[in-house]
Length: 418
Ligand code: LLP
Image (cartoon, rainbow, N blue to C red; front, side):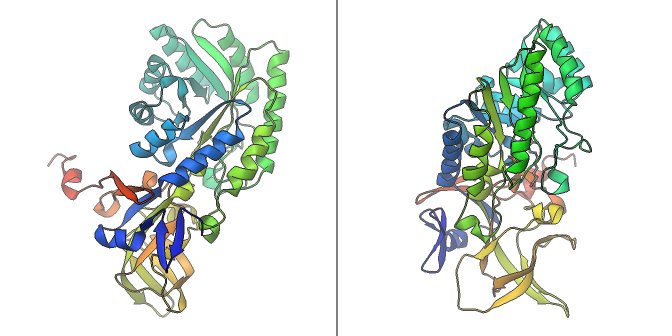
């Protein structure tokens, strides 16, 4: 099963920690991450870009736990942020301002001010109106800011509609024709420094073709810029490299990082440009498990339900995208397999973690691990049904560290006026 998550004598381990032992000593549900796996994912990215002038960034939206941010920062990564909140977390976690890029279609004036006055690496411009606002604020502050134009290349990404971002039907990016006009304007401006282009065509992409198509589109666009005598020094290639969410996540991980990323980057060798990435899922997605305890079994004339203590408020992806996450027991038994729905306590029929899933029979008190939950797991969690945010732990060899204590109802209550 691999070295980060594997079975030994029927027990699931993360690194050197027996997860059944750990789960029985701690309140469930909780998230648990393998530090070595995150480190190795980061190293694969650094390796893929080693012959380039390279700044890989971590997309905080995937997971903004400070311990994870500090770890990724210490390995040399920059940060990709999409809000003032993420910018503040990135700075607090130790990312230097020159390694932070700021994207997003709805940056507020306050956020833009913060980004410019902090002196971040660059702001990715997503619309004509936003360009005007960034320019105005840079002038008011009398501070330089580097900008890149996020182009919408109208390229199809084979993924869920909600997370495809590179088509003209999507709200993201700016038309190349608009960008070319604004680029000239920026190049002539005292405070703006246009450094290049940005693209991000979508998330959870497992095919190389859309990336190669995007690369060709960018290379052509660069020629277009150069032909007009416009300066270009950087390309931000976005994120989007998917992970394998099948049961293989434990045994054959990371083929997208090993195969797609090098092929994509290869296209930019010899361009003499700084190449940036904004990877989220590929760095942390396969490094996390959501551990949950079975509360009840329940049978209707049509379905067998396994009711667990984790729910859609902890892991929204199955409910929101119909996403498949592998589920395995913390202890393998002799019991027969059965087809079940794994559901949570939240009061919605859409609250499921798996439907019609073949699983080893489990009963109240047994534990399950839900794989591929390191990215967009805790980050998408909410207090729906007044369920507190759950703890997060980091494993390194035999050590486990609490990296988020979880919340209490009192802490939630204290945010309100009574
Ligand atoms: N850069 C930009 C501009 C983005 O919009 C995103 C993700 C990324 C980078 C990082 O993408 P990644 O490398 O993680 O694919 N909640 C969804 C994913 C939403 C992704 C949004 N943008 C999910 O759970 O699948």
